[in-house]
Image 1 (cartoon, one colour):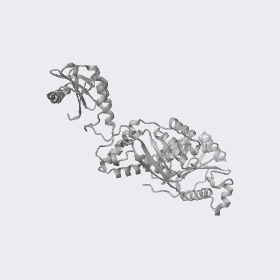
Image 2: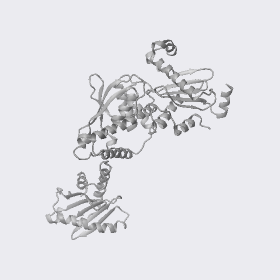
Image 3: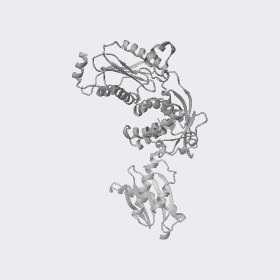
Image 4: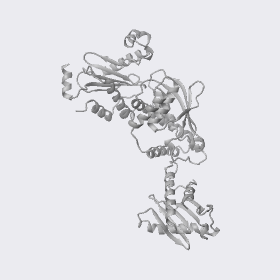
Length: 142
Length: 192
Length: 162
């Protein structure tokens, strides 16, 4: 994976380690077009990497007072960053370059949107999210 | 009373005589009522609409007294146009802090529409995408019942229903209110 | 009058309200409470009859029916069609203020003669009614009021120092 074509895999994990929302996107910085440039085999790997980081997160979550746990796991050149909500919903971002601050801002925005989703009376915790609003946050920060 | 002074009255009652509570609490409370009805009635949205209207009706029967006591209105409205103005500028203002636009009067002055630019009940709401709700559920239908109940207590029988809703993807949220008749007798109405 | 003066001394305030009655729109008595001595005690049945009679008077006055034209023209000598009926009744022993809401509910306040601002009192009673009676979801509309909260707040307003 070349640095110039940074790509992201973003997933929201529910309280039963079930995925609620998945998205792939490329960087929007430095003239990026937002299109993910993962190689085909990497796309499956992303899911495994995200999944395997859950154990790390469970170890880490009680050690930190912050909701943003920063980069929690690394596999080859691929990082996993995590934001853990009070309701034990995990926001995971798989990325290939460490950059804590923009990711923190991205997570904060996504968390805000997740809260609004949760305010919808017809939405229940752990229900899959179909809305595509999270892409807007990616466009802003990543 | 002029339209402008009604707007002032609504503003004043809202500012000085209304206890406020957190808007999210209201939105969530109303939302869970609707969602629970949808669940209990197994997605029979026509029935959900009906139940919401009924609940609203029972609220309206009671709320009218609060409205009259707080707004200190002692004069009957001269005509239905005045009634519409009072509903929008005083009623909705003091209870929901919104002032829906009055539009689409028919020729005999017995039917008008309220256009809701904002609707505090429907913040954050996305209708379930089961293929039915978008076509059948009037999410804020309780408001229709409130208006029907409240006006009935002041001797007006009306029909109120939504004809469009932003939640369904329409361009506006519009409620149509039609005067059926003025009630002459002073017999008590049945409490549903 | 002696009794009234005593009441003033006892309460230490200058507002002496003898009683509050509330009538539903059919003329049924749904609330009756005495606050100060000064009116003759009536049996509960007499109160019901009083309420019914009064309701008849007011609604007839406002409806201006032909057979009681003599009464209405006395009570409402100006424009009968817009009259809301009897509003104040004064005698040398008491004054009665009636307030009819647009929904048809009537509030009657009996007080010491020459009591000022009775309209303010009656409106406040209406507000308390809207708050503690109508907003109680278990109150059945048009039925007799048995609400401790309403009793308490009404007493606190009318006899604040006891």
